[in-house]
Length: 68
Image 1 (tube, one colour):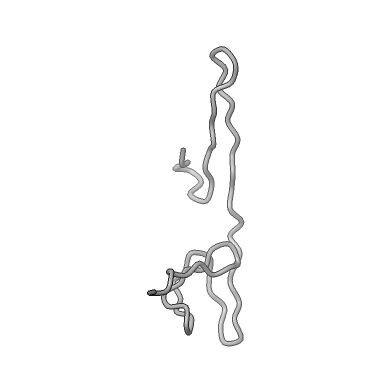
Image 2 (image 1 turned 60 degrees about the vertical axis):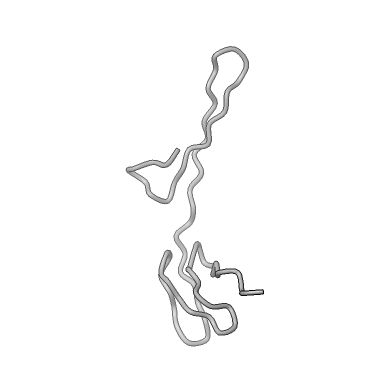
């Protein structure tokens, strides 16, 4: 479940014994990404040579899978 008041947090819930619902909140740290040339804010788009379109996410780049 995503939390509207905290967009970087989600709640992971599971059923326990009986009718018990157990929930944990998981939050992503909003860290910038640093390259030799620039800083990118958390959730900012970026382009990386030989990696294509990327997204700065919690201090690391997540990039599209390259074409086969």
